[in-house]
Image (cartoon, rainbow, N blue to C red; front, side):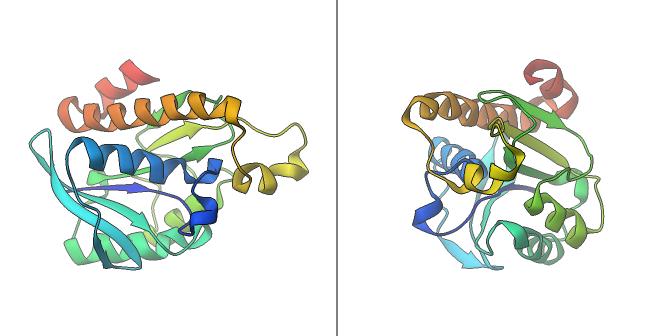
Length: 185
């Protein structure tokens, strides 16, 4: 079984923000593969299904971004999912808008949601897909940048990025992460 997690914030107010790119990717995957994300447990909404012949759990933690790891660790422990079968999808200010980056492992960088994930899983040895959102002109504007509404002219760029991230996740399941990294990075 493979655990695919999209990071985001649960309230409707955050739906159209840069910080919810992970949720948007999960929604696209769920729609394409007709996986209903209608179960509530583990401080999350989730659904189970099959993608490319692989059983998967699609997970949207409802703990708010900065506590995402608390929800994810519950699922990992309950289903005994090995770290090589975990992929976290999230927004990243260090990646250009519209681009994605796939990594096999690595640190959390400045992303507070990923800091929580690494802290709770007690490892950096899991895959991740970073959806580029770019960064504000001034570093001190970072919080308002990630949780503020996405400008209309940027929506199409970010929508293409989330579509690309969903395709990359499918590719990881079908071909493996190395081939996906070669194709999408």
